[in-house]
Image 1 (tube, one colour):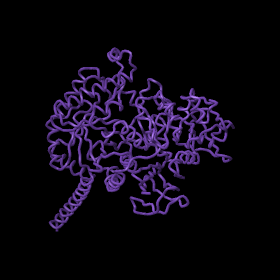
Image 2 (cartoon, one colour; image 1 turned 90 degrees about the horizontal axis):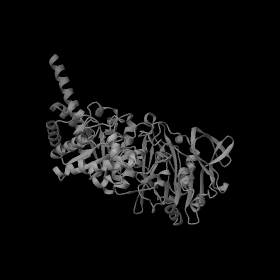
Image 3 (cartoon, helix red, strand yellow; image 1 turned 60 degrees about the vertical axis):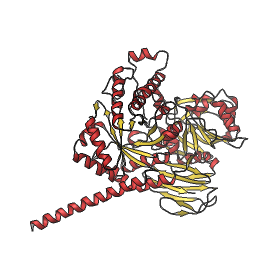
Image 4 (cartoon, helix red, strand yellow; image 1 turned 180 degrees about the vertical axis):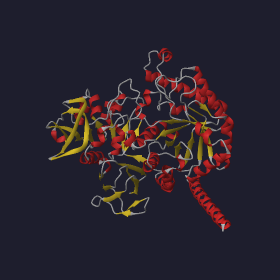
Length: 612
């Protein structure tokens, strides 16, 4: 009897093992078939290499787990936080994973623990210190002997203002000094050092997701991409309820860096920190919609990569490949936001993220997007000293523009542009903490979901320009206004702000909740549809649903991503729609046209991809 029981248990174990291996082989095979459109890679930190890959069992376990979630490429971290990975261990892991069919590359995380650390940041280094640069160069040179590719993780920044740095800074501002210093380290101690040892070395810089703070801490995407061979962007937005970062930021960050990096742009990178499974997968979707051809899953450990986040990711893998293949030959269309590199956001920090969460199809541009149908100008754009004349020329050529009041306040000296915006009398005063809850559109009055922050107290040249008001102490103040231009476009002004920081702030991401998401849905629908007028589209939907447009020689794909925890009902009209409209992911078709809007119901944390 005992022999029969043991036999049954043994058979059961074998069945489970074979089933798991079959699932692993299925996803690995599927991923290998799709690497031309989307590759899935994983990053293993130096400490986790030591802890989990030091023996044959750990290597075999890692291979099995990574294959099961569709990973076909592995980055092995050569250094992180004081630990330099043993060369023999790197070689053993590299050779094992290659035999298992993976691509294998190196990683480098420039965190404190070597050389001299910054006295004001626990992870940043002081890069004017010879021992720091020598240590980085040595690690890179060793990696170049072992690998043909290395990725530099996103701690390659500094805020060190030690006396020695102060002497070297001279007349430069601290941000200018940091950018010049890290550009020199990029050229000589990372890329130059790697290629001296291995001319074939592909050297990748991975930028963080805190794009509005790059210029303050040494990142310069206007110059660094020319030094590196490829570029990655951080798309690790995580749960906004825990970290105050909106999910659309992944798309914003990626498209902005891509606009400055050109063909060198390739990958997005995200993690499992503070991410429920559905939000974890949203990071992947945002990366792909933004244009990533490779997504890097950070932080392999056996428990982390077999948890709920990666289980859902594995389940959604076929859908991710379908999305990537569907939009592969398309380009982004939408409201192009002009953000010059190294410009200060003023009171418009991360405002693009919130407008994207309102369903405005915001796409970023590091250069003035003169060929766009409509452009978005925020306080960031004031860094361009010729912005007023460029904007006027653009409007006169028939373009439409959406401006924040913080931008408008910065061009008050240009009478012609102010008149075009409907504020020629220049009755506009920037404010810091003007909080409101009540709104009006025409005769209809309604309250918001919480406080909303105005950017200015202002009065238009003509009351008919005002489309929506805020009500403060019984007085109506314009929140949304628009003026049709003689050239055919429209000038829209949005009266709002996010927040601003002091010059000495060390904040990187959004430290506190921002009130913009409290804007009432009726006002959001109004703003969105004014901005969509050049595309002959109209959308009624809740806040928290993003909208994307992809184009290719007469063809068009649109996408909706519902970031909410509840189902989203959407009414979409498109004057130029062809019938039928096809849902790419479900195969469902819809009749559509100017008089036949599409009615969609999108489950929470789900995407619709429509070919129209």
